[in-house]
Image (cartoon, rainbow, N blue to C red; front, side, top):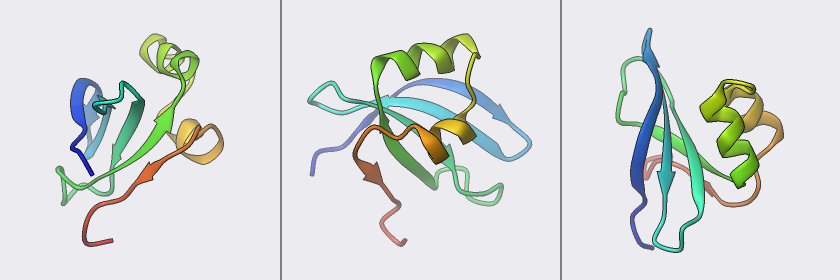
Length: 80
């Protein structure tokens, strides 16, 4: 599997990090840190372009996306 590249940080604070990433095939992902003690430990879910725009504009939140709007591939940390 090829690595994904973090493109943008959407939220950072109180131990939570939300990022947007892209893979070599130009699929978009939202990544959410798994806990305050593990800032580099993210779970990523594939999202569509509309959801990406909504996240960037703040019209939807990462929790809703992770629960209800995942469009495909889910990437978990290696130790999960």
